[in-house]
Image (cartoon, rainbow, N blue to C red; front, side, top):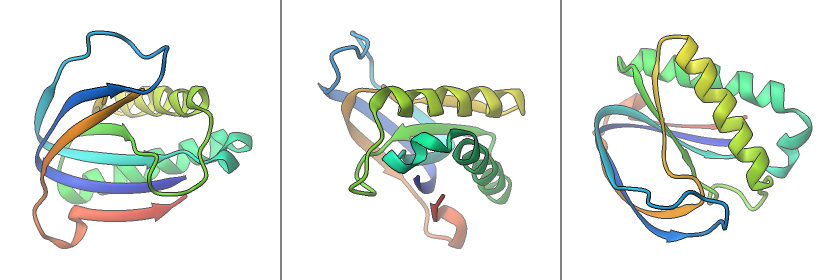
Length: 136
């Protein structure tokens, strides 16, 4: 798994192109303030170790949220961090489990529309922990 965590003063998206047939219809644009955005690429190699990658993903997100003093997390599937890609169903499962664990820990969690290309808008300040990359 590849994980790029970006703290954003403002983050927004507009769905543009549907890429998965089973993706929901009628998704709408959204905008958020003071959020930790997680650009996540679940890789093929993760399919045999889902418990381990899920646990490390949650741990890293909790840590960076603490450092950036935020309680809102956006999970965004970003299949551009590696050439290795897990099956969409497996990726979605990891996202669902991660959202559940983070929500149970008191975080507000949002997932961007899965199965869409999105126009992204972000305002990310330039300080040390505003951008963190992890290879999980």
